[in-house]
Length: 262
Length: 327
Image 1 (spheres, each protein chain N blue to C red):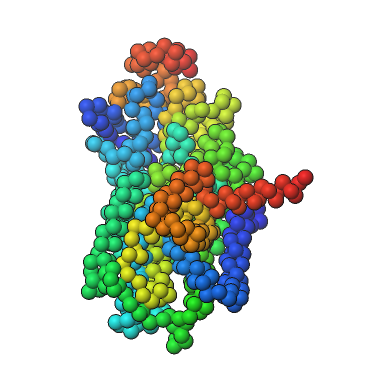
Image 2: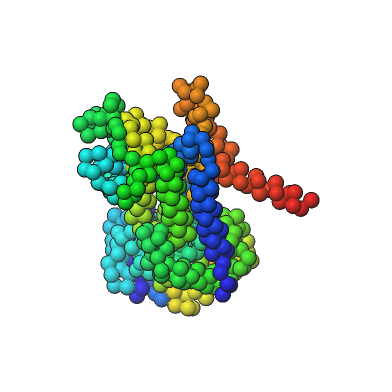
């Protein structure tokens, strides 16, 4: 298994946001993490990506123990992510933003960058080529590359974020609500992209509210409620699981109906 | 793949700018007659070097410091003492003082950079005040406020006396050209992009495998080093000075230079340094209101021209020429 999480726990005062959750991410699979609002999905993805530290539990990435590792160490190990609201860099062009994603494949330090020593130019070209490849992978039009990321349409911003993640050369990609704020057509395109990424061998972790999308592209679904994992299985298993149906019925009829239909 | 992208084009036009600056230094140095004008430009150049360091720290990496005068002071005292007591050749003394200021910056950056935004501003301000008090009180070393440092020998290279205002103009001009070239190289590099990313979103930057603490520390160290370089040049040019130079006022001026100039282009630091150096000569009658006037300028610029006064002027110019070009 690529990523193994065992009994992750996170407490905020009296509130147990994530309570002993275990899950695994496998290569070439989309593993969705779903659950009603406040179930602890975002906390879980923040724990898995090292943004916050767990109070208990362990995590192995390709067999290495990485619980409590900082995000940049996890990225070096091949795990990266996107964010619920795109975390793009203001005042930076699309191409440069994705080149930041390719940072790990360069070596220039402060001094060599300032003196622009010999190999720097070639390295810059390599980083640029890598960024361009990632951008065309996610299908961003070429004429947007010199625009500021924050000036782009929301759907394009989402793509830039995924391209930036891909440019790190990851094996595991965690996507936090990649379809939030997108129209149905854009959602459909993002779903296709995610599905293709999994087919190419990436282990994809997906937190998403759009049940059509989740049920359509996931090989494996983890359901959370009140910080606990209440179900874990294939799409078919999840859809017929009484605990899941109850969790959704218990919170919102609309969402429950949606989950059942899907 | 596309032939050389817009990034290469942007870098090339910046290099062009450095070449133009070098030409301007040569022309200015050989044609400016009034020594008063030379002196003002030398001070502007010296402050611009420190402001470029501030630009790396604040403009690129988004980390504020209101304590840069401390590193400016370390550079000035180190080179003055090296020249007067140890008789170290000026070029070595300047290089050594720059390294010393950078090392000092590196040392204090770890605890300081645990803080962000307003807290970082307050901590660096406090650090600057402490250093100012030390400069004023360590009289055996610095001479304090009175008499301060007197009669630092003039600048020279390999025995050639370069202490005249005209010679110092070329020395400072060369140092400035070199500094802005280094900073531009940094901006257009993997490291510069990482620092800009850090300013935009620290979390996302770390998530891409960038050790944000290390980069912040390096930016702080570089800013301290450039402030030290400026301080060393200042000591040689000024020859006699006292601790009052390195008060919080100087730290605020350096920050003002970047904000007034531009937080997105290193060229703004040159404009800002010139502006802040020359402005007081027009406000001689209002000396006691200087900080108040600075405060007003800072507030107005930050509200109405968040990208800097210099950038706004350039953009305005561009818009006007475009309008006249397309009737």
